[in-house]
Amino acid sequence: MAQLPGPIQPSFSVPSSPQSAKSASRIVGRIDPRRILSPGRVSPIEDTVPDPSPVLDSVPQLRSQSFRAPIASPTTPPAGNSAVSDGFDVRMSLRGKNGGCVVLELNSAVLCANSEVFAGLIADYRKGVSSSSGSNKMCIIEVPEVDNLGVFRETIELMFEEDVTKRLLNIGVYRSIDVLEAVPWTEEEEEKLRSLFTRFKFDDETTRDILARLYLNDSVDSQPNVAQQLVWSITTCVDANARNELKSLVKGLLCKSSVYEKNHLDLSKEDLYSVCHSCLGSLVSLFEEASDTIPSERLTKKDMNKPLIERISREVDNINWLLEIMLDGQIAEDFVDIWADQHQLLKMHENASPMIRYELSRVSAILFVAMATRKLQCRLEARSGLLQAWFRPMLLDFGWLQRCRKGLDIKVLQEAMGQTLLTLPLKQQYMLFMEWFRYFSSHGTECPNLSKAFQIWWRRSFLRGSETYAVESR
Image (cartoon, rainbow, N blue to C red; front, side, top):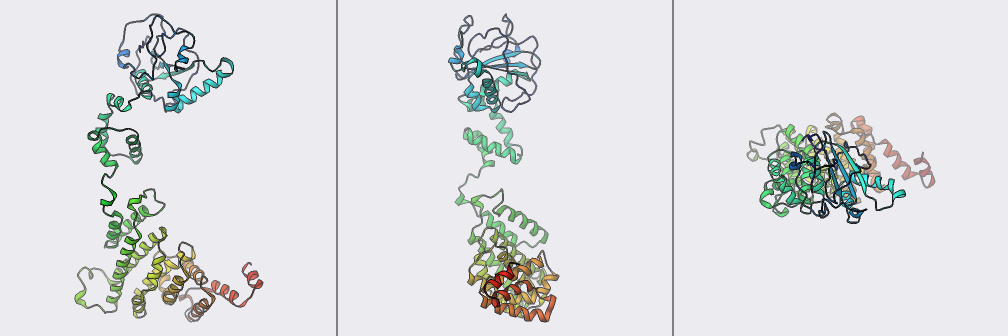
């Protein structure tokens, strides 16, 4: 393929891309009426053929036969629409910003498959000429103001290249891979690289280092459970600020709605409950220490570094954090049974100081709110066991929960307790509501206000049929 420059040499500035360069606003029309020498050839605008110039040397010859037709004799112009019949049905004229012109005859199917811009130009042109000129007419497209004719033509040629990898090698992409491996990437650039290496295959030696940054080559089974290690580390972290920061970070990574969710990093139910049982065991030990049932020789120096109240609060925070992860993963049903069966903690709760025992009711509060807001659905036996075990401790601790809320919404908690009570059979509701009534009458605001739920229970128990429906629907 030959090309000849115009009277002015083109500049070698940053090129416009034919796929995204809408800055090269299209002008669809006929190019100079002088003939094209042959299909797939580049013809000059001038009548005479001058000597080769640096522009000719800067643009390598096309190698793909899908890009151009066999070169015919330059003295024999093509007749009629032979180019169209040979599959070259687009004539593209590239005009340089500083002069010069390149005319290419191309296949429209390849252009449309590789560039939305050219697909739109070809479709628009055909709509304009279909009614008057027939379907076999050559589509003529002119691209003005091209910064660099040589680079633009190279980009067009790449669309028609059968062996893209070989062509990229020739234009220096392998050298670019070395540069990419040595610099930081943004997340957008990383996704583009993943797409590139998915579409094109390179030799292992060239891409080994960069692929090691994109993919974990080891099998999933051979990798340690990273999520479990993170959770264990957080529950044993002693620095409060670091622990809170890491809890927010890891919870965001593990939650179901996270954009970073990966199946092989999911924390399994067994792993999560394993950590939870460890935290419960530590909590029992701390309450034993508070009740002086642990011999002093069993206490380590690490145990004595922080005040007992702070250590109990930290362990309860860990349990509530794990419970939030369970609720997000919809695997918290078993924890209801586990918490209802904490007979040792319940026994020590009766004799413990109100300053520390209310921490246990913080765990119960999370469960009540989750049930009332339908984040946690569990069997009647589980709900009944939870309320039978922890409803009375909640009444005792409510005053301290109001004074030391630690992020707990008291109004939401009161509403949740009433709603959870109403999910039980009426006979069990009667016993629990009467217990609340007696305690509320003697402690007032130190007790949760369940008046609204109590009224609903009363109407359901003592008003029958349509009367109950009429009252509750008001």
